[in-house]
Image 1 (tube, helix red, strand yellow):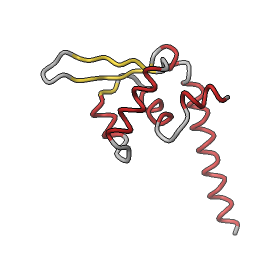
Image 2 (cartoon, helix red, strand yellow):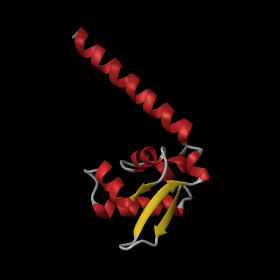
Image 3 (tube, rainbow, N blue to C red):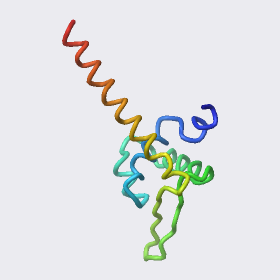
Image 4 (tube, rainbow, N blue to C red):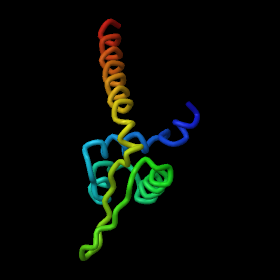
Length: 103
């Protein structure tokens, strides 16, 4: 558990992974999808996920150059886990809302 949380734990890494589950995303699009994360933090988290083999970074030779990210095969293996976490979080949200109505 510690090893997994060291790689994908924290406030932003699970959200970044979730956003990359659908396919390739450019840096600017990731920034728009995560407006509350600072540029410095997003860059740091992406570098760590790349270093740990969860995602792949590709520099596109356009003018101006663009960078896009996608899950690596190792990162794609997280899809079922991430979906399960989303389902679990959604059911918890529903359960909390129902409990508040009973009060």
